[in-house]
Length: 413
Image (cartoon, rainbow, N blue to C red; front, side, top):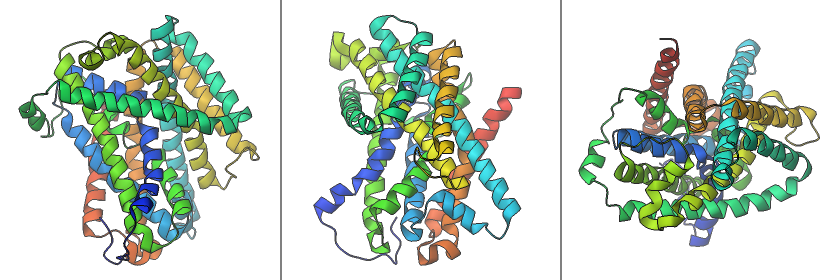
């Protein structure tokens, strides 16, 4: 969805490949234990009935991440900075909005952190037999030490784990082809419907694990560092769309494989989730799933506290490094809260699913802000949302709001 006023400059294949970096950073953030767990449980419990959620999530993540990236390029400022600047003459409203966004990001981050630590613990527990209630807090403390005392090592660790996650994604896609899913049932699952007995929460989990609120802030910041002029918008669009589609294919392949192999089964642990990979890996499916969960959990667990801290720093004017104690404290607070959530959780897979659903509930707040800012001619000039982008943005906001409110009210019903 390129803006019609963007330059028609031709880009080389090398430039296009280099442009994929920011997009795949976002994909690496959302392909974690939550994606594996939510997609597996959705397929095993409801077959292909919630396949439409995957399609909606892919469209939504392409649209909103594209908006946030374009905002970063055109304004050369992040999402938080643009929000503050646009309401600078209305300080009360500005403070209320910043507070609401901060609360949404913090709640989502706390839940996500608990899910990430639990996902890693599930993988380690499957290999060692040690309880997740012991592993999750210990691993959380390790992450806390790594982030504060071995920051340089994080980059190398993320690259190694990223390779592991890519291998896991490829295996799921291969398995999807091998199991030959019922295409008729898949197409029927493209029609929106919410199954009874937990279908709404599973739907929100699928959406919340893909369209992650703090990723919109991270993408705007990453885009402004990578590109500096409007003529590079087509390059940014390419670098956003392709990675998000790949991420959606991975999510979809996990759900399709689970629906084809495990429909009707109860998924209680990592070893249950490994069953769907047996057509491809046989006896190696269980250790492979365990290692994949560890890799996905660790990479997400490193990103989550930094993502939340970065967003709050932008909203409240902090420095985004350890020289600002508020930034460091937020890192620690997210991790410690995640440790407590993981340690108290009696049902690890249920906790991971709940974490994704919580992100789905708070998602409309950030989507609404992103759509509003990118519709503002005062901010975006001629690169504001076109009619199609506006309609899609409002539709995504409305659907996520309806699902989120319905789920929230369902807790009290």
